[in-house]
Image (cartoon, rainbow, N blue to C red):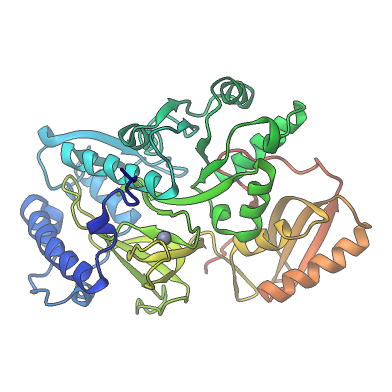
Length: 433
Ligand SMILES: [Zn+2]
């Protein structure tokens, strides 16, 4: 018997017309459910009848701040929740760099849908029952932890490592020889460098040949991706997730041509953040997501803050669901420098694409005499510092349209960031005023 190509063929290859009809049906149900169970949605959702999927634009947005406020107004879960507490079986909490952590609740069915969705993503990237998988995402309140259950559902041997120290993780990899792992791009790079320091060549001496990356834009940046792939002699698959909805909501197939988003679970809108009008294929806009099956806390038109580009074109793998071509950054980590929108991911692409640098970098934005100044710090391996300054300054100017000061350090000078990379320092005050 030949092995199946798709985890869920009918859904994954549904022609777009049929997919939209299916979405409209699910959306109507979701709205009905939200209105019935959630005092918040009962108040804010208009009673307009939706005739097409485009009519979603008649509905109001929600964002992270609204979720937080609604939660605080009605502790502990908030009045966006549409089921009684007895139906909630799991919560994840956002890593919450600022303020109050927000909880993302799941019913038993929500959790089952989530795990099935993870299994689908792993299958799509090429994982099979005979594979061994070491899950290197943190086990705590973080939604990334239970994603490993999707690999287990698929039938792969799943090692729940979490964020153990790098030396221990390398020992596990040597001992059990997994072919797959999932981590952040920064950590994939850091772990490879750590292996090298221990005298191991990750490309030859270690078994990892497939790396799933999420949590930072790096996985979508061609130059970063290619460097990590070369370091490990591995395929890199980018996944995108949001604890407010699922673990991963989108991921690359083996074509590695963008990341498919699960459109049977959510409606994707890509909007101009200034006008809220939809942008076209290939244009950058903020991604807005609406859940279609989530019952514990439906999210209607959730502004993710993530800047993406998309295509509706059918993929070579045969799947029809929308593909994102990269998460280019967030509306809130987008820097405005001398009136130009600067995405740190664009600087990263230039730095990681320059073979005379180590790939580590730091961005410092400051204001001198009322003018914004962008400084890019890098580590030089091959050329004279003055040469690096010239080459890099013109490459950044060409790609970003801004002038940057370049500070050149010897290799190993800049701090190595491991999990969530903090490479941007904005020293300006009142940036947004
Ligand atoms: Zn595909």
